[in-house]
Picture: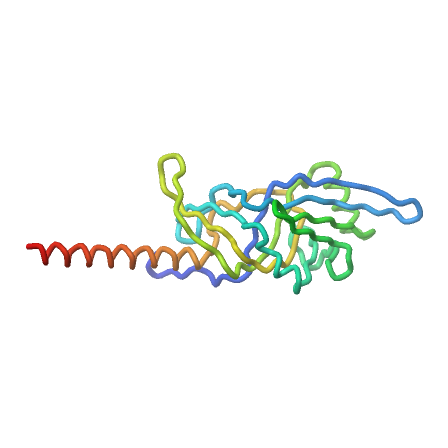
Length: 208
């Protein structure tokens, strides 16, 4: 832990993924423009770095959003801007379906300046990623081997989903991700290591 610094308070976490966005246009009397895609479950992210500088990968467990989808409304935003709403589950213009493999979404774009701009940029391929905002309520940490080194792995077991946003830069953040539960996991490992050393020393002294 860095002396004299504190990690930022953990609230909503933002993740961006390279997702193939599908576009569909239909309707004669009233034009309907729909984009769709999915967030894959049990798929490891690219390597990230937390606020303290530790490298980790992350995956979302199947069903992690299921409880949240039963009770919480989710909005579709343009690049996380709350002033640029594209749709919502409340109105039915954003539809979410969780399966064993993925969380699939369909978003009907509005006939507004923001909606029209989003449609044109997605259709042209300028915007080809999806970012989502969540608050993790339950996770599990472990360590895995990657290229001869051990890194942390975070499995998100339960999370509240707030938003889904088409974004221009679909990549996991490379640094300064605030994840307090990783700090707690490290402390647990340290305590377990210290307990092991104490027990080992006690046994050695008894055998002398």
